[in-house]
Image 1 (cartoon, rainbow, N blue to C red):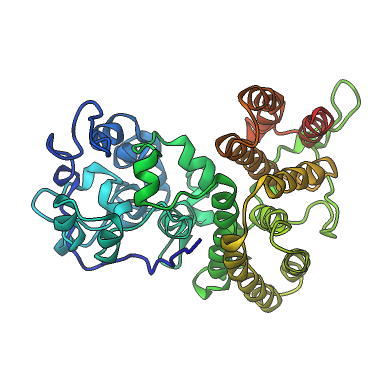
Image 2: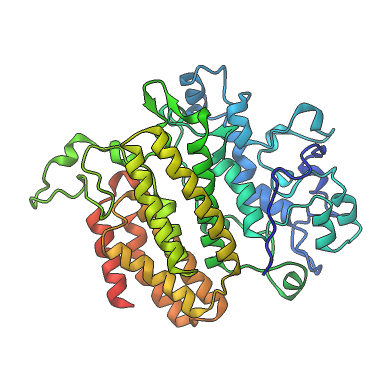
Length: 430
């Protein structure tokens, strides 16, 4: 399977025409799906059900205005730092007559500028690959999709949710590409026509490639001198929020004499209590994913994780050196995972790896537990779609996952021992 590398943003200097250019009743704005191979109600689905459509409106809410005030900004809905992720914030000269910033994250923010050559060809019924050659982003490709999604759901050197922004009141940013794709209302149907026009990538490959690109992007941010320090402190957005943000009362025993939410050691890090811990959740997921591609890559990733933690307690130079090696491993992982055949045995191996690590206490940090839970859900769904488990098996496995989902339902009430117990029960049942 051949994947393409996105040079984001593609056709960056083309004018954005606005969502209305896609949403007419003769195009993608039909109220109900049609007999056409394409649904043609994509605009309506986006407008009514997709949270990207309300991303700008969020900036008008009291919480957003309070965040802006805390950051010393006049308001949120005009601040570039907010608009870059909450809207299709292209330069003024690239906004067509029907472009409306208040439309939020619209069609062109993801699919590419409407004034690029692909739009006319697309209206004329040109093949998908020809549209891609002329500027349409092939979002069915997980590498391309990750390049688009991570622009906001993680950031880059030009836009990044720093610790200062979160300290001002911005919620913690969580993302896993396959799960978040599934969370959004689908405006496409994978049928025979779709498969003829586009490549279809299973959820396990999408999850694994997404993790590799998350690690690569995070390493880029870590290496960047722009986010090296914030005064006396390192940029704390790179670290695990929950390692520090716990109530002091968590060190007190509950009615059973247990310490359910106090610091819990994780094998292998060498970090004790009271130490800000680098957020390595995506690295842990990639370590599991790489077990599908080859043990030598697993060992490299394991060493990278240890080097990052050691570097964080030594010097910035040591951390940057470890980040460069980790980035190289992550880039190699994308190619290896893209080439790997995701058969039933491979998917099962990934699931068993996640469960085994969960039982052994490697995911006692909330974000690692959250990422692991989403990964398990993605793998189970991918096995169903591929026909590796039948309807009854899928229903049984989904029911067994309920306790795991419940264990990570609230990050502020996360109890590591409950998560480990839920995964242990899942392991025994499987």
